[in-house]
Length: 428
Image (cartoon, rainbow, N blue to C red; front, side, top):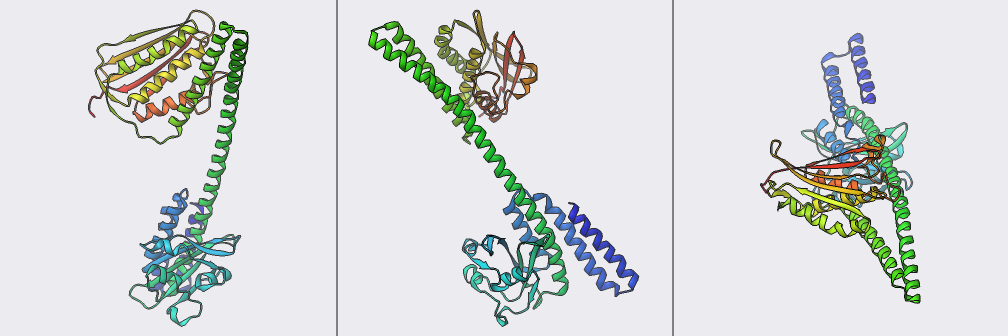
C-alpha cells in the first residue's frame, strides 16, 4: 500500500502547484480527480498479489474501464528470452492469443518494451509497427491503441495495451498519464505476486523434502523389520523350529500392518476426497475397531475395555472416516503403553444437552509432555520415537471434514485421553 500512498501524495502536491501557478482550474482539476480516482482504484487490488493470474485480469479490466476503452490486453516480459507473451487473454478465442510471443522491438508492444516509453496511435493501419496476429486469432478489430510499459526500478515487467477509445478516434494525453500511473503500480503488484509465488514454490519444495526425509526414515525401520522376520523364518525352516517360524511370522505381520497403515494414512491426508455421509450407528463403528484390535492388544498383554452408550441413535457420518480415526487413536494408545498392566478404555457418550456424540479413547501409557501437546496434530510431528506423525494429522483432517472437534488431555507417566465430538444430527 505504501507506493500507492506515495504516488497519491505526489498527485496532491501536484494539485497544490496548479492552484499556485494559476493554471486553467477546471481542466486541471478534472485531470487530477481522474488520477486520484485511478490510484484509489489501484489500492483496491494491491492486496490481491497472492494470485498472479487473477491480479492480471483485474489490471486488464481496470485499464479498460479507467480510459473507457473497448478492450485491453496485458503482455508479460520474459527477460531470459527477451520476449513478450500473453499470460492471460480474455474472450472465447483468448487461448489462441496466448500462443503469440513478440520479440522486444517487434510490433507496437515490442517497441514499447524496447524503448520503455508509451506509444499512442490513433490509426493502427497507418503505422508499420502494427502486428495484426492478435486480431486475427481473437476476431477483434483494433482501430486505435495506447500501449504503456510496466516498469519497476527500471526493470520491465510487461506492457499494458488499451484498444479503441469509446466515443473518440484516439486516446488523449490525459489517458496516457492515467495509464502510466496505473502501469507503475501494476508493475509493483506483479513483482510482489511473483515474489510470493517463488516463496510458495520454495516452501513446497522444503515440505516435499521434509516429507521424503520423514517417510524414508520410517520405511527404513519397517524394512529392517521385514529383514529380521525373513531371517527368523529362514532359520526356523532350516532347523524345522516351529517357535522361530511363529516368531518370524509375527514380525512379518507387524511390518505388513505398519506399511499398510502408512499407505492408508498418506492417501487419507493427501487425497482431496469427498466424505460419504450417511446415517450410521457410531457404536457399531467403534465396536468393529475394538474387535479388530483385540488380538493385537492381547499379543502385547494390553487390556481393552469398551463402554458404549446405548442411548446413542444413528447419526450422519462418514463411517469409513470415523473408523480410521478410532483405529488411529487406539493404535497410538497401544504404542504409548510400555511394560505390564497396560489398559485402553474406549467410551461413547450421548451428550443430549449439546446435541453431540462423543468418542473417548484413554490409555495409561507414558503420556505426552505438556509443552508438546499443542503439536500432536501437526503433520509429521510424533511424540513417539517410532511414529510417522501422520496418524493424528489424518484423524484431525477427517474430524474437520465432519465439522467436529478433537481434543487431547495428557499427563506424563499417567496416560492420555483423546476426545472426538460429533454433531448428533440425524438428517442427511
